[in-house]
Amino acid sequence: MKKILWISPSVPYDNVPHGGGKTQNFYIKKLQESGEFDIHLLTLARKDELEKIDLDEYGISYSYRLYEGGILRNTFRKFYNAGSALNPRHRLGHLIMSYEYQLLRSMIKEYAESLSESDSKAPSESTSASAGVDIVVLEWTGMLLLLPEIKKHFPDARVVCMEEDVFFQRLGRQYKAEKNLIKKRYYYDIYRTGKKIELSGLSKCDKIIVYSTKDRDLLMKSQIDAGKIYVTAPYYDNYRPDSNETDRNENSTDSRTFIMFYGAMFRPENIECAKRIIDGIMPALKNTDIELEIIGKTNDATLQKYESDRIHIRGYVDDPGYYLRNCLCFVAPLGKGAGIKIKTLEALSAGATVLTNEIGIEGIPAKSGVDYYYCVSVSDYINKIIGLYMGSIKPTGDNSMRFIDETYDLEKNTDSFIELLNDL
Image (tube, rainbow, N blue to C red):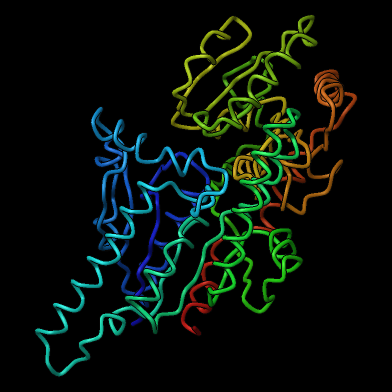
């Protein structure tokens, strides 16, 4: 049985609200369930997450440190992170903040010392801490900054990096989108520094896990060895209708006509997207009875001011699938971000007609006009919505569900991932 040390800046648990956390939660628990690995997780958590942690129920050992929660801790963290947050050429490259980095760094050292102490009590076994770890899994790009600490304490361990997205692409889009020349230069320095650190770290890993061929190709163009890169499927909640539900809208008790956006509404890119729909699209639909549903956990008070008879800010709901299955369409005019959007996969799985742009469909090999509708301008979204409303444009729900079933088989990808780790 191989021993895995999994290092993550975010604790996984069932119903974690963000896409990267869902994927981490799925794979770490599937690997543990396989019975082929002994996993220990080093992770960070917010105070409000502690009661949600369910790793013990799955037999996964873990250690955590609080990085957020409480006035004193939050104030100290903000002060401690000032340099890494503001300096565009900081040595951490904006891939991780200083406070979180130091917490994880100390946890790695403490874990290695605990293994050495255990080994010293068993003279017949090796006294090297590295003998206690076969594979180190780094969850998210920022964990690459911990490689020196990992190599120091576990020199013989194989290192796997789970790249939720290619982070330097996200940084590059930020600087390219900036209009102010001074800010543009500032963001360019962040991008250049972050890209150098990310690629240097990835080159030192034994395997790099990405979630799309697009990200694989991007890394290959950046001179990362293709043999190191492995493509798997990200986790998504499958909201496909029950097999006996032949018509989503007829069987719904909700007779309203509504469009929707869904995501982790505490993320700036999702908040901006919601406001883009509210300010840019909804006014053009004022002569219809079309309503807007914004679904997803939020702590942004500015969204609440938009609540009205036609615009509903729901926040967290128990079953997003209900809204996805019954909406006229899922609208996602995203302006920022990189990597596969889990919200798009979940909308497609539910049979929602998806209207989105290059960012919203990035890394997902769906066909425009067949599995979803590609939109660029505000008028593209408006015309598609009105076309669906009037019946002149055909919904893509059946095709989108078929596409998800054929392209994103999570069980098959899990088996392949387990085989990959066993072969390291």
